[in-house]
Image (cartoon, rainbow, N blue to C red; front, top):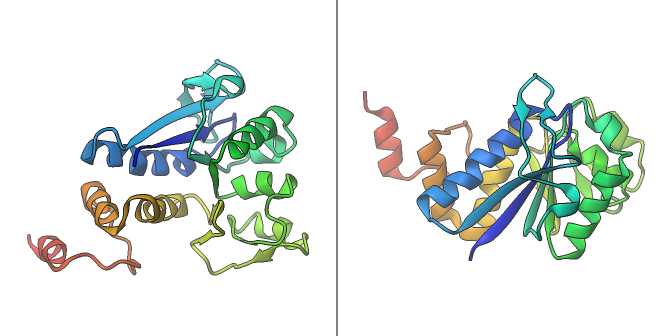
Length: 208
């Protein structure tokens, strides 16, 4: 079924934290047109300056953000500030109240932790954020995890782990067949991979 994915951006967001999942979900739409609608939102309509200098013009502001099925919250140095930003917290709460699942990448989990949304759950974040999560006795930190699915909240480890998490969510929402199609279209072959490629895919990879 068609799904809408919201990417919440802010100054200092780590580029690959959102660009990796963006590639995954927009690839879904390339392979199955109309299945995934992705948009970016920020506090203001001004360009967002990310952690490594990339500038992104958001599609809408937080207050304009339409309902979504999934909300992606990236990490980056900006989360140290944004975890206390009432505008970011308000849009997360509003979209979640409308039925959206939440997915954090890297230190995006620190935003969810500050909101109390990880209490009583397992969670993971980038290694620099693990000591912060470990200070909260209500969170079970699984340091070996690439990503963790807690139903309505999914957390991922650092940076590139967001791609793994996004592919997992494609499997969860649309099934393993489409997830493997997306992975092959992206030529993303980490080792080991939870869902091994088909024999045809493996043969193509071994061919010159």
